[in-house]
Image 1 (cartoon, helix red, strand yellow):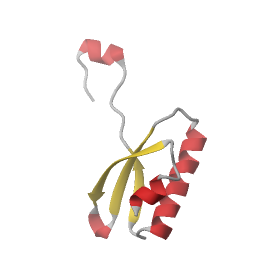
Image 2 (tube, rainbow, N blue to C red):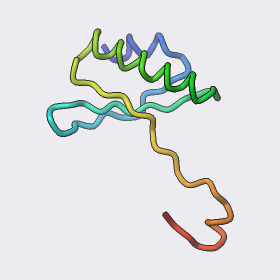
Image 3 (tube, helix red, strand yellow):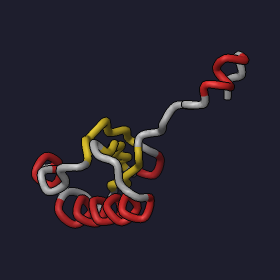
Image 4 (cartoon, rainbow, N blue to C red):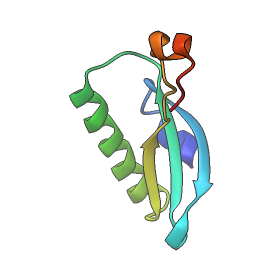
Length: 80
């Protein structure tokens, strides 16, 4: 059922699903194309609404965390 919903969102890729506290299912996604912050936020909220309505009301959608891309910090050996 997740696949059918994700077919409607070609700019998003499913990454993983993790069971969270309180019975919630955390769905992690990543973007395949660049878009503005506002567009990404709206798209993530719409995806979550569709998944809640069509699949399971306990689903929560999260953007995949990005790693630290600051090359200066890496060169100095600083880690976060």
